[in-house]
Amino acid sequence: MLVRASELRMLDIINVTDGRRLGYLVDLDLDVETGEIKALLVPGGRGRLSLFRPPGPDVEIPWHRIVKVGVDVILVELPSSVQPPQQTASVRPLKGIRTTER
Image 1 (tube, rainbow, N blue to C red):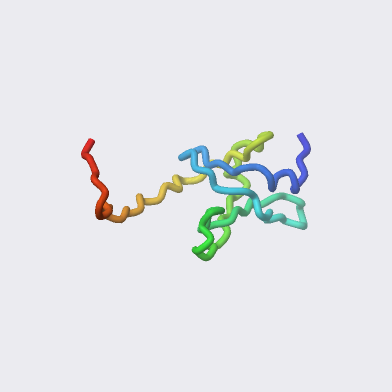
Image 2: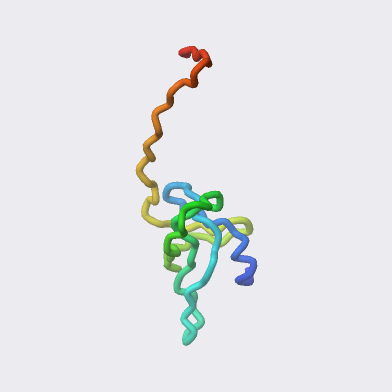
């Protein structure tokens, strides 16, 4: 199966270890002497809807961690990328609104 780099940029990259979507391909790390792809680069530190946080450094996925390049996704196997749960703010009822316990 032949795939163009422009086609790879449209594929979701999924970590099979924890099922997390890592993002889309933004760049390739290529060895120009041998023509081998050394790594895939995905944007790090910011999702599409997080406009108010600065982007983090790109995440480098070594080529040996690629499990499968499919029609719709690129599957990779990385150590678990689960982050600790974020603390939620305490919720107070609004004045004048009655709440019921369930």
